[in-house]
Length: 271
Image (cartoon, rainbow, N blue to C red; front, side, top):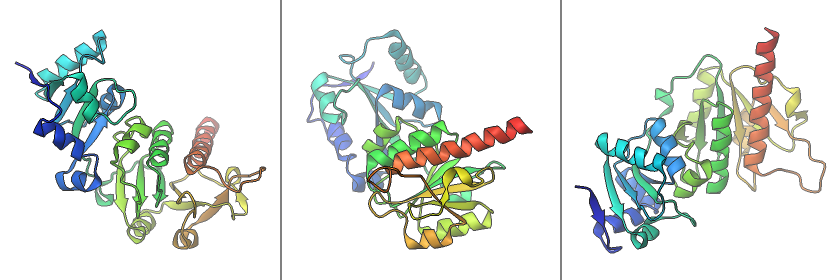
């Protein structure tokens, strides 16, 4: 028999709501993933939810029903809830009736197994969850090996990061590290550090991004700290022809990543 919850005051529902808070997530080692597409990507990337809450009032198609039965058959707890209950636990404006409680992925720099020619992102003190999520989405599309969140201001496991990333938080390994630890790790592995800054002389399309590279971007207002700029092997800028001197950090990261992708594809074609 399927478990169902009809009261918004149920203790389990209150527990889910608490996981919106960073301290609760860190204490419990759990996070929230809302949305069928986001949850599907998390599952396909190897995540195993502790519990999945579903509301049939929001979804009716055959694909969803098939996935639901598959989840039950795998032993994952599925809890059906009423629309008022789901609206209490949902954090999206237009929920689709799927929300999971998932163990926070555990990655560390020492555990990372990189391919021969890695492409990485270093995000230093990025403040807005939407920007970090968008960076992860671009990183997934560009085939990035992982993202190092250095001295993070926003929690990578914030529900709004999950939402903005469309679930790619699970397909792109994320490691939280302090700046010195990350720099030492990159140096030990011979990974070149490319710093994005409006003050650089070189345009980003003029530098060689075909080798092992970590593209470093900084906080929305201040950019990269002096420590990262001083340690960079290369500093690059994106030409700005308007009145502002920088792009949104997620947009800038996307341009830099796809220039690396372009160069690598061209190199393969030449070979």
